Length: 192
Ligand code: ADP
Ligand code: 5GP
Image (cartoon, rainbow, N blue to C red; front, side, top):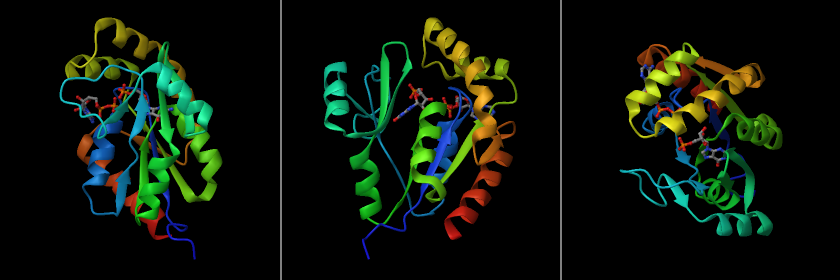
């Protein structure tokens, strides 16, 4: 048996501000044998973020080299001029170490990974109660400039249309309810 062969993938996608990071952190804290796949990005590091833990923060030149070498399972220019990608090495290393893997990726990236992993992956779309709630959450989070928030809101309206293509639609209105609902669904998938 190839070690790690039976390991599964949890994909969490949503428009920015819907609560992906919060949901992913919760699932990671629940002793499900999950490990986070750290993505590569060309965006600037935010206060409080740690290189190699939140993302691998790399230059656009390095990102393009990684694409050419085939190091990325998927990648997207999620916002104009800002690239994000899932590193094959992260997913494989975690699976070889005996973990199921959880990825936090944009909506298109999530659908692409699901296509590749099929039944081995469970894709979750985290939905905000409304698009205007997203704006409020992004403003409250205080990590993005007004211009960034505007770009994210424009994209969010389009991303919401993909919700029905995911295995599970999680409405993140009341956070505690959403956390327990997603936990049950993920447990069910991992135990299948
Ligand atoms: P994402 O990773 O999708 O961009 P975050 O997890 O960073 O989103 O959440 C965006 C902001 O909204 C954070 O400040 C977070 O604490 C807050 N938040 C998350 N879920 C809820 C919720 N159900 N109700 C209110 N605020 C929430
Ligand atoms: P943020 O800059 O807020 O951390 O993330 C912005 C968006 O990029 C989020 O929707 C996040 O899920 C997405 N993202 C993060 N990593 C990846 C990745 O590896 N691939 C893709 N396609 N999107 C990613």
